[in-house]
Image (cartoon, rainbow, N blue to C red):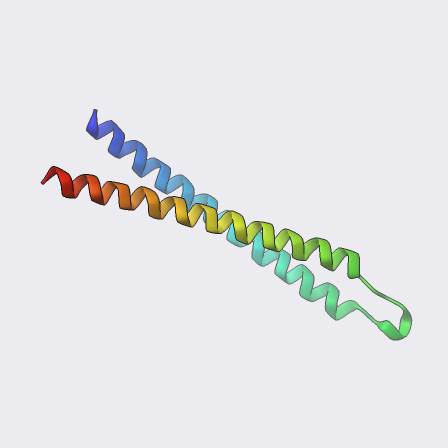
Length: 89
């Protein structure tokens, strides 16, 4: 039973790591889009992208929160495994 549990924790850690990396790439893409839109704004010509920039910044914050959630879950799983290993010895 313990071996399966260790494998499932390992699989969960790997899944969380992959999700974290995917979210990181999405966040980098959103950051690039924000920079592009900000550079393309031209107040003299009346070209503004405030709503799009705001929406993207909100998305960036959501992605950062999702990344942090996964990072903390990984840390909790690792800590639980370390405590379990320590108590077994």
